[in-house]
Length: 272
Image 1 (cartoon, rainbow, N blue to C red):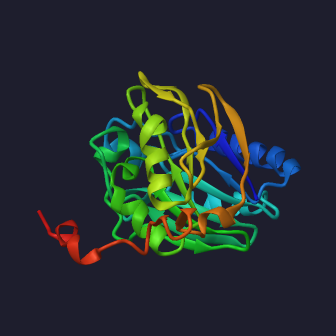
Image 2: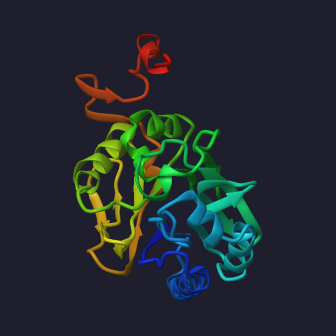
């Protein structure tokens, strides 16, 4: 399958312009016939809001519906994963929408929140990251900071994810994420990990770009630079379905999931 990661530079609160740019990228990408087009965290809205009140004032209440309607009319045979800040009932949510030509396939609201940007003011989601069955792969979805928590990716892998999609806003100083963390999450779970970051500067916060696709072996399949671009990566999802490494049959074998000992991991579910 072919992945397209759209590394964009959203404009804070400029919904109409951001949505126009998103649809233009989708239309251009469709010429390459990708199965999935991924946009960054908060690609539709921007991220560095100064207060909850500012975000509530600038963001329309029907934003998700508008995005779903517009994108579903543009995406053709491709699926689109889009990040935005949603407003609902006086609350804000940092959300990811998986959209097809038929409409919304899945919605995920970020549950692990850093004290950064608009995440200081959003309500954490209550549901675990989804794994969505599609015609070409099983897609896991999570958002940015959540890659720091190994349990999040592991649970999606245990639920059968072939590709784990991370929509993100990695700022300057977060270089460890593309350098080390994404590769570790991919290889320890033997999944593809596709991280789509933004670029540019928003209210003095710079973002590093470097969107990337990592293989189940922890190798970088493709990586973007620091500016706006659409990164394409061709992958074979069946590579993510074998959780064993047989270097020498009967003598040197690693069975990553079979060798787990969940009974020893009880501390992971203990409340602080």
